[in-house]
Amino acid sequence: MNIGDVSRQSGLPAKTIRYYEEIGLITPQRSANGYRVFREQDLHKLAFIGRARALGFGIEDCRGLMKLYEDTDRSSAEVKQIAEEHLTEIDRKIVELTGMRQTLTRLVHACAGDDRPDCPILADLSAPPAI
View (cartoon, rainbow, N blue to C red):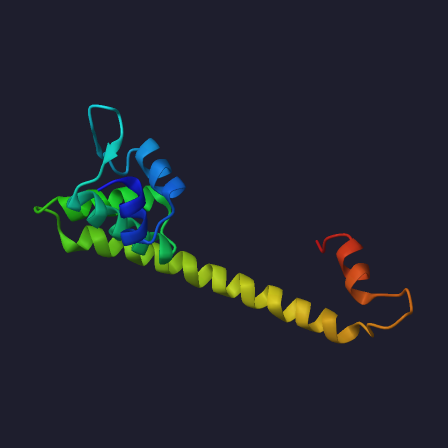
């Protein structure tokens, strides 16, 4: 398969596939003229990486998960640890985003949104950070 075929089948842009090759996540074969030749296993890896990225795993986590996936002697505990660490990070981000949402909701409701120049949103953004 060429990069266009693999892009369509994996749902990943060709630029992303080239990047994954550049950083060593995949290693497609090369034809005599230098074109990438993707095998079924490359497509499977790209789908795996795409799904992991969609779940928010970082590149290094994807690299680790891929190594574990390919290691038939792995323990599921190793995989679970990576997933649990990622879940903890997601929970932390949810708390942070919830706080941001509450603050922004309060500011939006406090702003009259009329022709007057005073604006609680801008006032809050320009205030020195709380210590």
